[in-house]
Image (cartoon, rainbow, N blue to C red; front, side, top):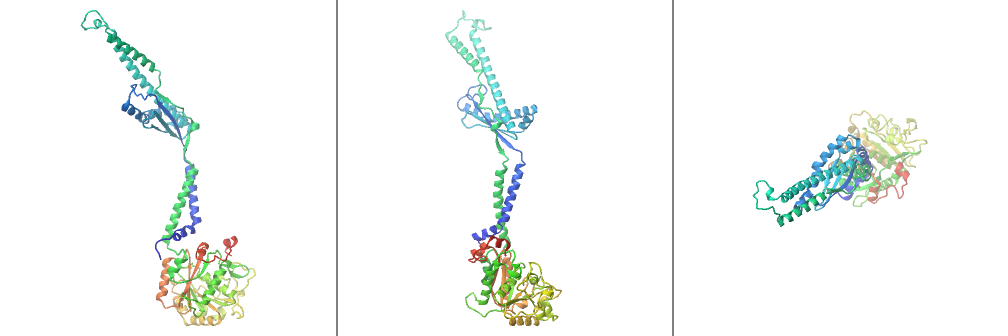
Length: 544
């Protein structure tokens, strides 16, 4: 088989588990929604501050110094002001202040900008607004106090300089007198400059160097988290992707046959028929019959076996006795045998079903027959073949699935040759210690010879030779071998082992493989009809 996965090999396991994947995604989405719904809300509020003139510490800076002073303001807010605001709010003690004291504050400013943006995040809109306004007010007050302090310091220095100019040298202690006190013209000019500077500083005392552009309001708060609907949608997408990936990886690790092409490649044999996946392959509704979804594929199987064409197109003698094998238990081998026999009866032929399975016999239960005698009794000589054979009635009034017939209702004589019939030789579970010895005995050959002479077809149902050796004596005692493989169930390794077993063991020719349990899409992709041209919703639901 080609190890490189094709598009169909990737999509097939995902599509096969689509409902499971969808359920997993919905569970993840629901869990995500519940988790985030239970998380506390986080609200964000913003306010902006304008630094008029960009002053710092009352000194008017310019150029590089002004830029550095402006860039340091957000750091001052984040490192100094926020801590003092948290202490202040904790002391206040109100419920809103308590929530605000635990909030997060971030101050930022753009490069070469006079604006600072203060962002607060808390569990309440009101607390976020309170925290933002408190931080802004505290920072404004701090800057104003520092600014006034700088102005006062400059005023003190200017007044000292002015008094020094206004005092003559003769009045200054220790100064050498140069004659009558005189005031030079330069001193007068300097005095006028100092007086002007003092007046300017006094006028700047009332100015606000930092302004809050607008108060932060709780009504403008933005909900940051949780957003359960958005998170649930994101969780659904993530769950869908992870579940799809898990389905693909499981399919690659599982190595079961998923497409019909894999069945052909593994067994190196032709596909005799493709049987769609149905819930009830055998139906009891007054008569025992196959599901109508399977009727046409089974008719095709019957015709193919009658023609007995080799892969090269050459026609051989029609085989009468067929051995049905499967690689794994549960591949639907027994069901295919029973359905094929019912279709052969519908065509007016007589089919004998020999259940050479003493481990897990199912034919009597599936076909509504008594489980009181079988092949083992014939082989040991306690019953004759005619006494052990049971005929599947063409009509069973009031019968339904799962209701076996009683022994009194089960005929034991061979059916008349004028009409089709299904004769069953059940493999009733018994305490026989060595089933392979029974099946390799001379009476087993006599049973097959007798049934081949009386019936048109002899269908033999045996357990997988990979599980039990019961089938080994019969491999060369029949006219042909039919392998049954079930998509999504038959393991690739088991299929390879069965093929290798048949290749190295003397046996009848392998006529081909019946692909069982095939999804409708795969049936159509293979170029066949999934149960006919039209299949209504009731047939899809019940498989009838």
